[in-house]
Length: 286
Image (cartoon, rainbow, N blue to C red; front, side):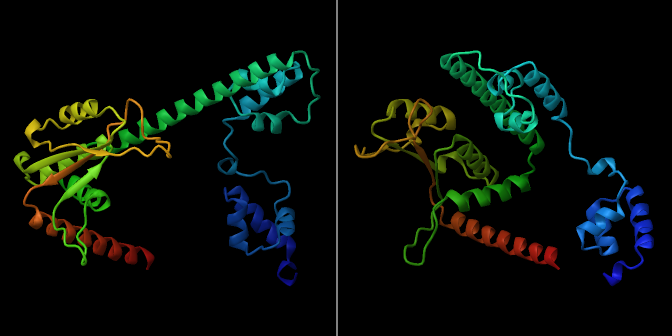
């Protein structure tokens, strides 16, 4: 406790820092006060600065939830009214008296179901809004950005050459139409002519094969003669497929003819990216 001997002097410093807008942690680090009890005494009576206070976006919801609870509403009814989780409601109103049961179990179940549906609807809207905002952050891609993105995309999903199995050819396989679109845009950026592309659909035999073939033909805009024979995956009756439904179009393989030179450049580009990223990371660490 020797370093706290001049308590009043230390308190003067702590109060001054508090009024300058510093947080408890900042004051603790600045004055080297490791004891929380001492820190509490030093800051006694001094309100925290506004910027350290927690966001009060839910304060109105909490007050409204307490009003509804005092009116006799249950957690399910409050959830249906406000669209917030029952765990939050429980924290906000647990000190208030519990209302008398005024409904049958069936009615309670229906209210709970509607409340949960409301919560799911709000979550779906939040997901949609977050994705839209993130998409808007991207903006236009420069040629260099598309180039680097395409290299990483290929190295993630494209075929690789192995010392024990030489496969120096550019073949990209994916089921996501967005991935295929970006990859084809990248090939065009590299100057690869459409005449050098060949497409192969790989799909489960129980799927809508003809529909998937039409989808990929329209999606790529390629000549039908560039599509090779579809590869059917045999169905295993012991397994339950989850990649099914009307939006299942199988996987599309995109192969570039005479692509050994292209593949070698892709591999070189990738290791160039790895080296540049490693050097940048080392600089950030120093």
